[in-house]
Length: 123
Image (cartoon, rainbow, N blue to C red; front, side, top):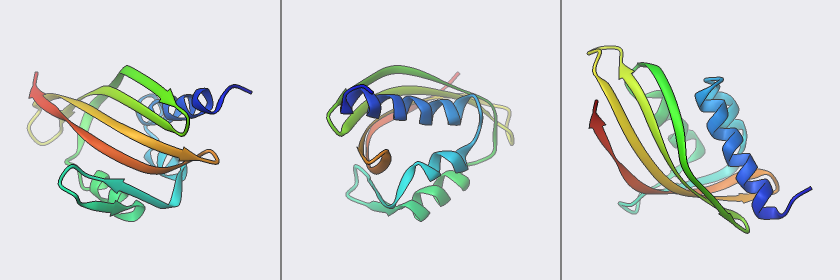
């Protein structure tokens, strides 16, 4: 077994792999604690159910891929920067979304997430 930080970093890498390679969003949500809270820059907080619904409401896309640019861990927190690439089914337009955030993990479960923003560009 590694340190707490190493284990937490491996968990978040696994989350991104589930989303990218296996396209298993339900499995991602199963790694979240039932009391999960998502903190937004606009001071809005989402429950696990609300966060899941927001992702499910995202317009349909195809050709999804994810690249981890940075993944850093310190104790119970993991900071990341990733690039999501996808094509919207409705329009055929291709986009790249940069996402940055912090996860807090306890007992192998994601407890909290802070979205730190990012940006979307058409490619």
